[in-house]
Image (cartoon, rainbow, N blue to C red; front, side, top):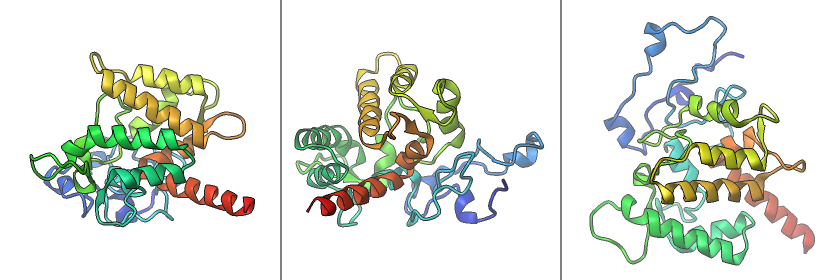
Length: 246
């Protein structure tokens, strides 16, 4: 498997995420720190606009980055009018499209915007509309996560791969529900109740809507969470099911 020379796939700067320009990372370390000859996937290099893994070195080609960082892509599904701002109503509608019930969707929207609105604001004055600004989404990174996003919202393939190396005991490319719980426990940072609880809720929620018929959460589904591509797929699947029922 050869790594594509596509500059988009190897980019460490995302045009829409100006913080990635202001805080650049080196992308030439492989020139100075030799890697094993059999390693063709540069899994240690942060990627600004794609979410690759060992099986998909170019990320998700059909998923449009639109110049956004990976963490911005993660949330873009909920920006229904594409204005760069996500309001609680949009998060609620997005959750409903993903298959969550009314109570869960309301809870997700309420707590997500309660916790992440203020950090993402362009100024210091709170907004009673509780918007989340996609441009500043990197400021919403919380502790007790997998570390797959860096502090600028880039994607770190090595940390994504480590989730399966550490916790994929049953299958090398899938996690059981118990293994997901073990992962959230393993990522827990001391004295970080909010981040730990949020991380646990996020992964359990994903498991509930994206697990396969055998009860596993696949590596591909988990990768799709980070660049947001799985949200579009699940929403379209649910829409198709709804049309068939009618």
